[in-house]
Image (tube, rainbow, N blue to C red; front, side, top):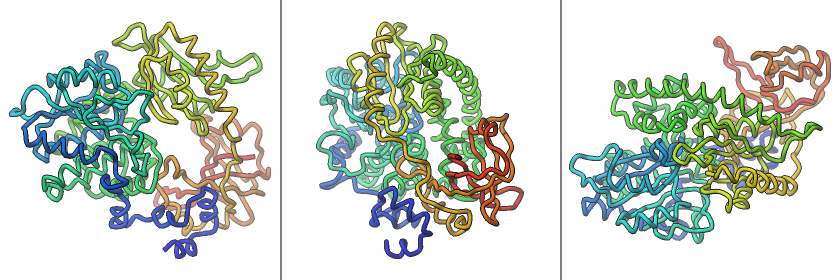
Length: 573
């Protein structure tokens, strides 16, 4: 099969894959959307290369079912945590377990597992979806997308008689949560599971599906339909699109088109994502994810989870109205805090205009719920890791916030060097969350900037944009068809970027309030339209008739019933 694909692939795209080091043995998987083939690529969680502790986790849930114990699914309030919460609660409920769900409460519990949230779970206070016949004291908490660094709270919960089944995909800290009854985390020492890039929702789906199979409910309950939530969680959390993750996401995207859950159908409608065809991953990331995140960021994540769990369209419509209201509130906060953060950035440059190695930004009137997206904007604008901090509503002497990094800089590793200065932290190479005492801000800033400076010095220089040459004559419908099959895009599976030269600028204008650059480009007898997002300022230096080198991603432009090839410009010189 690899030989057939190698022969069929257009040359420029094959060169891109060679440039990325994709082995021939993976080529078929990178382009396949066949349902049976995708199912075969979902790895077994058991066996020699299974997820450590998986059999014990399934056994624990079966024991809870047999004893009639109450289980509380404790998620987190990002999209991965909320989708995973919905998945696992649905699966455990359908398997006959007395199961409820909850997220960290917005009155100071913070993110992840805390003493307060675990105590509340044990009392089943603010726990949703629990059957009336279930015992009002929980025996189990099952975490989703959180808990690997919550060693002390888990130990204290065990002393109170509460058992914790921990599922997480983040990196463990220096201390391991040995007090948990079972730990499912592909990153834990000794775990042979090859896909370390599973998101929290995918791990929850694996556990829930296995419990359903064990009680003979897997056919009736149809866990494959829940892969639409796994797709949303995977794309939103920006985990690597490994072969298995691609299979999970592609199956989920098809489910979004063919069998969306009532709440998800309303969500797609509100976000103006059509299901006439399989949704594009980037559509979901830019239109759907912000709506779900609005609930989590304002500590009202239960609104988003209730939407996912809606039993019918009427209930889903009501839930969607609440989510849209939160989205408008989030947008206003986002705009204000982003503007203030960018102003703060300007004061951190040297007199010579040199940016710091990293940005640490904070504001007493900021909201931690939008810190991640603001940090992302700062990191993208300046090409530096950014931490954005806001007051912790439950700890007035502390900051709480999020960080985002840039390619080549491992944020988790940089924060690990400053771990002695933080109260709480966790994450992965490109994103993290943290709590910090305000009186340690200056000391932490120095330590963090020093850690990032070392990482930047060791990082490989940025390569010239463009992975392979493709002239305008190479941009055929066949090439774009192969590119579409390669998606969705994400870490380790980015949209291919080609380059070409001797391109003449035939026309130019600024659009989007001057932020973006629209170009008409000619190479030989072929003329194409191009758009450069965030490149509006280049209009001051480029001139019509100039010959340029362009790095770009080709795509279809559908407008008024006509379909044309256009290019998304990544670099022009």
